[in-house]
Length: 435
Image 1 (spheres, rainbow, N blue to C red):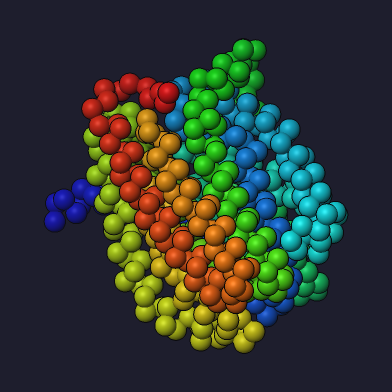
Image 2: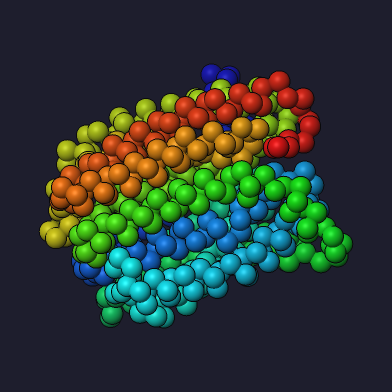
């Protein structure tokens, strides 16, 4: 009993418990909106929203050039503040660029983008700005080991997002109401984080930094954009390629069915990521500095434990998913339940690796992450080409994508296992530097 009591009393266990509790509340709130959203919005409108949202997710992974993830790992608070100012400046320049790219895709009617109005880039820039502010505030909370605050703020985000999408959607069931809910939810999230943070102004907009502090910090932590960013951009692009490819092959309605399936399956993944990843990253970063030999065992135990729980609960749900989708979202979403059963194994593997994926930010061999990136990118393209060449229906195309994604996440685990060994033997207390 004493070891169990020690675990319960440890700061890490309390952080995990707090994050899981608040994230569960937030995700439950958003899950409860599903029956209303499924009956308010058609698969066509949901498909346009999915196309917009996957573009936004890809863009938000670029606007900071990954310097926001360097904030928790910075060796001093001065470095962290300099990185924050540098990341914010980069976002100011790259956010309008993302809007112009979307406008060009609308004008040239790439995939189903022709169904979006030219006002969509303005909504995109609002979403990127609000999400960017959230990420800066979250990374400062991680640095202070105040990760429970992030869980509390996620409850605010999900309440605001769900209420907006239902209340306004009942009046005008359009894709842009769904997008507006994303923006307003993130504004609520940022407001919550800023209100609780002890000094949000000095962190997000620091004063008194020397003129050369920002470029010097960006140069010292250049491994984050140079080593980690390319694979993350490719991974984000894969999700966008999937959405654009499915919209091209099956129209916005077909994409809507697929995106509803992904939205539902991604809820447990998002729960694990949001409730555990920030806490796990804080522990991994601390161990990388103080006890590098602990990184690999923690990585392996975490993945295997989450994967075991995922398959134990996910396999029975696969058989009932078509009926559940029709009951929860409405009869027109039954096919999305079939797609969910097919994609479930890949989603469970994603669930297992997501919370500890940031180990690649702390190893001297982060390039091994490209094992996953290469399989995911090439396999996705091959699956979509096969669907176009034969041609395959949406169900068989989803089966091909599921097989590719499952294989890619197995490779992710193997790469993380190998990469985590690079920290073993490092002097405790030294500042990590990735060449």
